[in-house]
Length: 399
Image 1: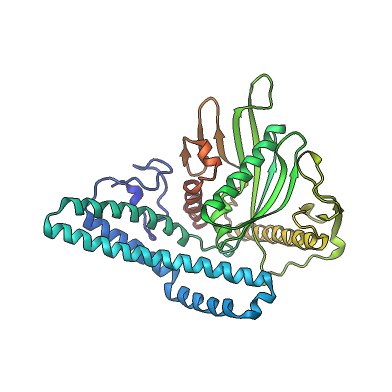
Image 2: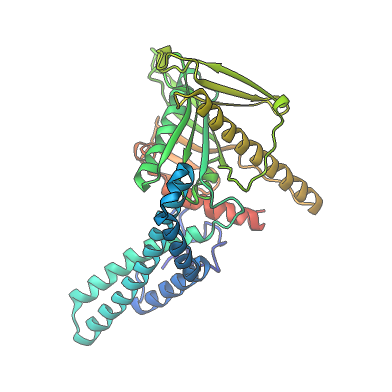
């Protein structure tokens, strides 16, 4: 077995390299099935301890009581939060319990194969162990998300950067990548604002991924993404490099205190528009809010009501200011400790479509030879490696 597989909750900080190819989280070689069962049992036991299954069961029971209360639905936002949280915890609990049950069944199956000398049953048991290993490793990643805001929903903003119309087109490709990723996982999303470019693509877009731990899952995506391809907008068929910036922040909750004086805001209203300037609203319902001290600008145009758009835009602004404050405090603490500050807001991933095809993360070394699949939302390998990488950085292992 490769060294990559010997990562458990205790050894998660093992850097990529050595015998492992970067990005290959499952590189299974021949192994004694009995040893495999012991290792998987230990990994799953560590996951169960970190997740606190008894605590999860109590939380599920409490949420079910809340969901059964007819008065809950008088507050639609609160009701949706409760049902989303209940669905998530139910799913996580069922996943862990299901893995434990399958591991027990595989153990029995292997014992039966050994007693009866049945090679077919043994092969079936070993195949199940391979499947279990992959799923347990994926679940292990969830236990690494222990940051203050990791359990929050995610607010994602994408901006086209250098590269003209190709950059605007790339920004739209990146938005679709995340929306397809969320769809694959059954995570609800809501697009708050989209600013279309004149010729094609997007100038910017903001949307939420409404799932617990969405921020902890996606925060490693924060930074600059780079596309290299033959430009479909260049009549000479030349290769073009373009860039899109991705910003990921946690969604604010009622317990957050973000006071924004009215005199620090400039609020503009305008008519929502679609691609090419086509009007999609007949009233000035879209809202743009500028926070004068920081220069942060947020917009919302997904609702027909100006009041609703203003409330949503304020929520987005609060989230961005909360994240800004958090980063400033982290930098101050690092300075006091004499530690260097690290930023993930630099170029993080290359998507090369010409002269060869590859997507490669510059921090973790994870790569994929099928950019089309990645841009269609198959980014789990990148995301899981980022979570491990961030954890190492925060613990000082990556310094």
